[in-house]
Image 1 (cartoon, rainbow, N blue to C red):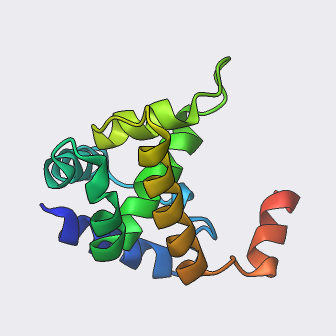
Image 2: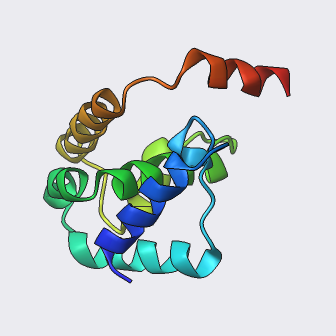
Length: 127
């Protein structure tokens, strides 16, 4: 399974009735998740400058990997956001230039997705 298939699966899960309002909450089978990470790392080939292409070609997969990795791991004592993202993508994120590439690609994607419906986010606070 490649990046395109993973992107398609995430998109389909997000469109299902009762799907969570936030892409990070979509659950993938562990084998699919691991294969998606492996293929994304192969696509990026250790080069942060390819992040823009990843977000342009596989927007659901890219956004899911960023947000899901943070929702799974963020909150430890150090709150190291970029470390988790670098780890999931298999790329260095030490330089501000690399972080800016990620930030800009992610913001463009978030704008394209739009905000979740108010009704679905309110339901999360009630549960």
